[in-house]
Image (cartoon, rainbow, N blue to C red; front, top):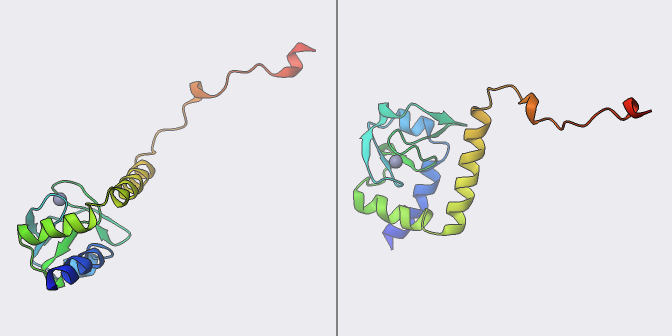
Length: 123
Ligand SMILES: [Zn+2]
C-alpha cells in the first residue's frame, strides 16, 4: 500500500529535517494533526524540528518531503509511529531528558547535600 510506505517515510522526514523544512512553505505535525507555516517552526534540537503548537519533538513534516500533509495522513502517521506505546514511552523519555538538560540553569541545591558531620570531629 502506498499509504504504508508514506507513513514509513514520515519518520525519516520528521528527523534531521531542518533543511527540508527550511525549503518547505507548509508543515504538518503528526502529533497534533495541525498544519502551519514552515516559518512557525522556531525550536530545533540536533537539526530536528519541535512542533510550535503541541511542542512535540520529531513529529513535524515539511511539504518539501513530498508527503501529503492532510489530517488523514497525519493521523495515519500518528497511528504508525506514535501508536505503539513502546515507541511513545521511548520518545517521552528522550524528550524529557532533552528538556531537562536545557533547563538545568540553577546551581545544585546545597541544602540537598547529605548533612553528615565530618567523622574527625568525633575523635
Ligand atoms: Zn504538533
